[in-house]
Amino acid sequence: MAFTESYLPYLLARASHDISSSFHASLKGWDLSVPEWRVLACLSDVDGLGVGQLAAMALMKQPSMTKVLDRMEEDGLVRRRSTREDRRRVLIHLTPRGRARVKPVLEAARAHQDARLAPLGEEERALILRALHLLIGE
Image 1 (cartoon, helix red, strand yellow):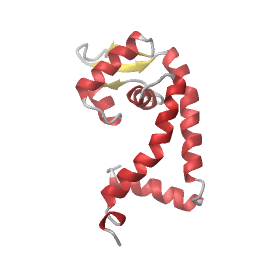
Image 2 (cartoon, helix red, strand yellow):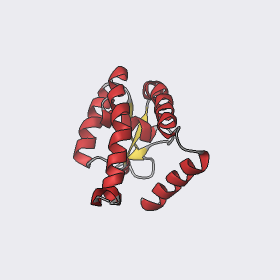
Image 3 (cartoon, helix red, strand yellow):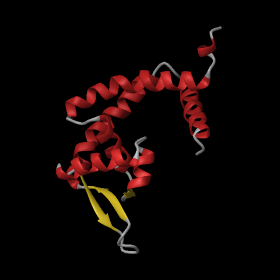
């Protein structure tokens, strides 16, 4: 057996690339870049995140995140808001326009995931998700 066939980091990277590349290509149909999609997805079920936390969740460096957020704020998809407790701390929130924009993309992402996992049974799907959460420390 070739080394890469049993090397977990390689297999995880390959699976991630194979699964996400086709979905990422479809983002053009929604006029979204991959970083914009990640921001919208990360904010879709929370009431605001700090820039650092959002950057970590979206797998981006903070300076790149700031540039993406600037564009998204100009497009009316997100807004920055200071917290009441500490006006220096800023949280990023989806706007109504951002929520409306991400809703069909989330549905498409779920459908894409379901299609990719279709060859697996329910137990195998649950096991993969559970194992991945354990590997990333959740």
